[in-house]
Image (cartoon, rainbow, N blue to C red; front, side, top):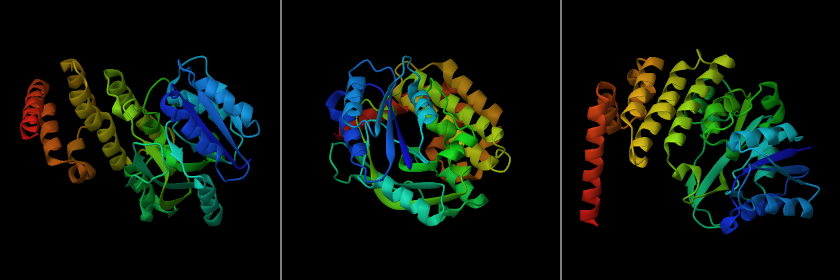
Length: 342
């Protein structure tokens, strides 16, 4: 079989989100492919919708139901174990793609000998094929046979997994199973999915539509999701050690960990969680410093981190209490300025 498309599904029945995604997959022009849609113990009628697609398209559609909610990582693992395709594609069940996306990705792979191919995506707030804000997902210079420099670049700017195809043999041979029961599973495994490949190709076109709505993971902040992001950072380092690339790419991994585990978590936690806890912020800062004591001198951190964020991070490393008080006052002041100007 040419391709297996794996779709984790959880409570996506409303507002035609699930059907719009599934219709775009059924309409793919690539030959000899299967869709494995894994319902992750939904509480709405998502699974009924999937069963209807399986009934109507039995030659290419498989509806699978997990009795236990394992989050996207668990659903992806179920799909991977069932998959028969030479190539693997992942898609979020509230997004959709152009009809020839997978055909073009696979044709590029066959023409170049690549075992990893990606494209761009666009952001959209409506169910249509109108191209929204285009997000470049990779860089031209990352294309080609992967040497150390290209792998460094992919660790720093690897882009999303859902706009790529992967050779299934690479996934199976390296045991690239996603962590279960946490969010941000792609962040934990993303580096291995990219740099263990031998050849990457990139199509600079938005073939994937990333649907923006209030219930998507990126728009939902909670203490649990912040903790999961930190777990993903820890797992990212474990993966690098397991596959033997930690020492070679330590500066890049240090910065990626700093961004994922610490910077993104710290500021989303402070901005999005109603009842912030001193103990949580203190522990996060301590673990960051114990994992990479010299992270503030990392060249990528110095180059890529905003000066105001650096100032706040220095403050948090020095005094969590002062940082939290200052941040809250700054937040109140900015909201006041915003209301006054509006």
